[in-house]
Length: 376
Image (cartoon, rainbow, N blue to C red; front, side):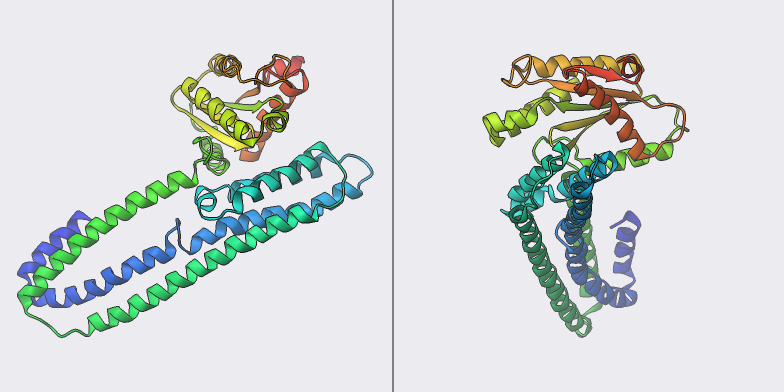
């Protein structure tokens, strides 16, 4: 409730005849407002269904791509990359904190998606994994059914509240003074509810953009950041560096020590890197063991220095990894500085991902930028 509205409510106490009419309208608005907020709330209303639907859509997009890969006589990198991208999007839209809290099937489904993604990434041509696909799709159905029930309950509640409002609209006129006092009281309540709703909305938006495991931003937040960045670029005068790093031999680490240890390693690495980041910088979990950093207002040498610090800091954690040449967990890092030209968000990811690929291809545990990448 804005300050002018509250001022009008006080004036309404003096304007007794007008107050009677205004009060009846506000009673209807206030009582129905809660139901509408519940129905359209992005945390638990009808929009919440869209997340699981998007995840399912992206996963189903993979099926024809897998068929194309299995039928192809030669390697098709473009199709493979598209399949991996669809897997990542399906994972990101299902890897939502509230889903993980409400539904037991979500975490196994996320693990299954990673398993299918690993098959495609390795280029393995194998029999169709009916059981895994069935488990994932069953989880989608369970989550969707539960969301439908929630939506139906919210709509029923809104209908009940609407009927109750009709009753209040037909309540006889009481004394002018009492209605004026009620007007002030109801407006004050609405002001408090509105403030609470805004607080809850901000909290939900933060949760929706945060990775549940590492408390970094998630891939959805990264895409929003990059979309905004490319709209402002190259008009913006600031210097922007992108850092893309990947934990080396992480799948083998999980195979050796289990996913619980893997999750703890991800948390330690993310926390360690967070402590190194200068302002203004944002840290994102891209997916699996891959992380992305957007570093603003910084020069090329500073971004490379940051990447070197990340390399050393992760290795100094001394997390045992027998599959690594160093015997401990390490990372490979790609660094890319934006040039004065137009980009797309996808192109930015591709640019720095190519440099990360070079780092991993040439021994891992190293930093590669657009200049060193040309020399290798």
